[in-house]
Image 1 (cartoon, rainbow, N blue to C red):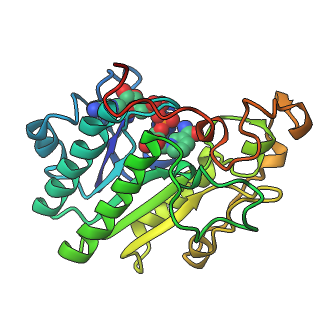
Image 2 (tube, helix red, strand yellow):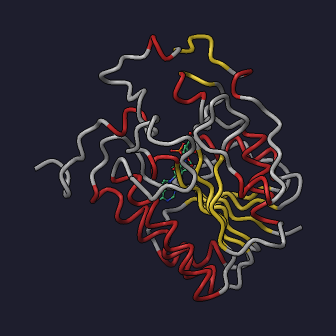
Length: 269
Ligand SMILES: NC(=O)c1ccc[n+]([C@@H]2O[C@H](COP(=O)([O-])OP(=O)(O)OC[C@H]3O[C@@H](n4cnc5c(N)ncnc54)[C@H](O)[C@@H]3O)[C@@H](O)[C@H]2O)c1
């Protein structure tokens, strides 16, 4: 079985994807946090991606990398993102190239388009980046780094701009960009296995009513979502009218991220 290195494997997305991916891959689960419920075919690597020597060892022998780990948050300061989101992504790409990794999957976010109003376009797939936070800005960097490694080193890279990956849909904005774990796993498998992947940007979304992303490239590559966001509403789902117009960010792609003040470059001073 081929080895798939998953960074940030202890988090929400990693935990949700593991059951789908371990059927096909031997999983090397990397996180700063311990993972205590290891299953057959899974090994854990506890450490920090900001340590390049640790990254080197983690990547060695991996067939592919699924890079989930990052620092995130609405009002996160730029300085907080530098080591985990910029440096660590480059450590991984450099090690991937050195060790002959076959596929590199980078989880980006709809927040790279988060600053747009939801009525600014019919779909947002091809709009220029409009990052809504220092978190999103670091994702724009990660996407660009993936493109650079594909062109420079022929490392196939697959960027998934995830919508919302919670277990259920909490409000009207997320209804337009939600994904199930099952559909996200299908996209990851396409990124790992489709022969045409060079550098791709796709959207991690299930079928969504009034979708913000039409996801044509993913569908071209064979993506056929199995789940519909409308069938997974949370018990306390907030319809549009019930969302606070001032603070919910209901009219922006990135929700409340789009309205939050950008913390000063170096954090609070
Ligand atoms: N959950 C969503 O709805 C959503 C939406 C859009 C994009 N994404 C993207 O998907 C990815 C996973 O998101 P998530 O919701 O699982 O996040 P999460 O915060 O639940 O998990 C991230 C994990 O990464 C680990 N981590 C962070 N920095 C690390 C470092 N330097 N070294 C080692 N481990 C480190 C953390 O310990 C954590 O377990 C992220 O890249 C995120 O931007 C998620």
